[in-house]
Image (cartoon, rainbow, N blue to C red; front, top):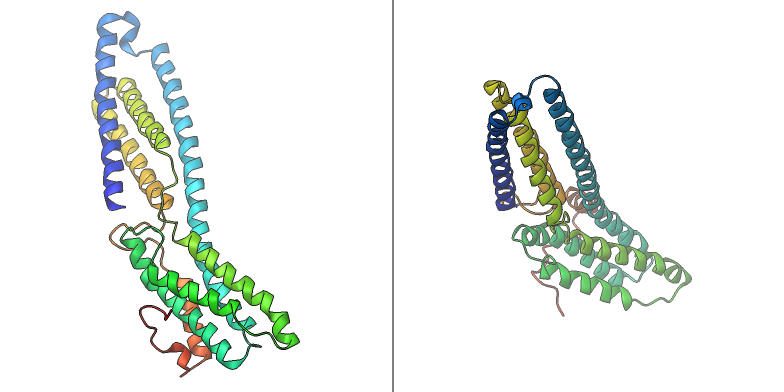
Length: 280
C-alpha cells in the first residue's frame, strides 16, 4: 500500500508539473502569435469558464469515487462486525447440544476468532491472498463439527438451523473480509484523474500567467487538494491493505467479542491457548 501511495502521488505531481509547463508554453505561444492571446478582457473570461467546467467535472468524479470508497470501507467494517455477531449466534444456538459437542463447537469458534484477529490480519498485512491457512483450518473444523452433531431432542432440532446459519454467516463474512485488500478502482479511472490534474494545472498556468506568484500558490493549493483526495482514495479503495505493515482497519469488533466470551465464561477451558492448527 505504501508503495502504491508513493506511485500515485508521484504520478500526480508529475502531471501537475508537466501541465504547468505546458500551460506556460501555450500562453507564450498565444501571446506571440495571436493578438487576442494576451488573456485580457473576454479571453480571460473564457479561460475562467473553461477552468470552472474542468474543475467541476473533476470534482464530481472525485466525489463519486470517494463515495464509492467510503461504501467499500463501510462494507469491510460490516464484515468484521458480522464475524463477531455470528460468533455470538453460534454460542447461543449451541446451548441445547450435548455437552461435549457444545464445548467442541464453542472452542472452534473461539479459536477461529483468535485466528482471524491475529493470523488473518498478519497474512493480509503481508499481502497473502485469501488470508491465513490456520484460519481456514479452524473454519473447516467448525463447519465439520457442526455438520456431525447429534439431534436427539426437539430443542436440538429446533436450534440447529440457527446454528447452521450462524456458522455459514461467519464463514461467508470472513471470506469477504480477507478479500478487502484487493483494489477495486480500475486503472482507467486513475488515468482519468491524472489527465484531469494535468489539464487543470495547464489551465491555471494559462489563466494566471501574468501573475507568477499567485499562479504558483494556486497550483500548489490545487496539487495539495488533489494529493489529499488521492491519498484518501488509495486507502479507502483497499481498506485492509497495509500502509506501514498493518491494515488500516483493526478487528476491534472481533476482539471485543472474544472479551465478552471470556467474561461470560471465566476460567473456562474454552479460553485456553489454541494450537497453531486444529487436529484433522
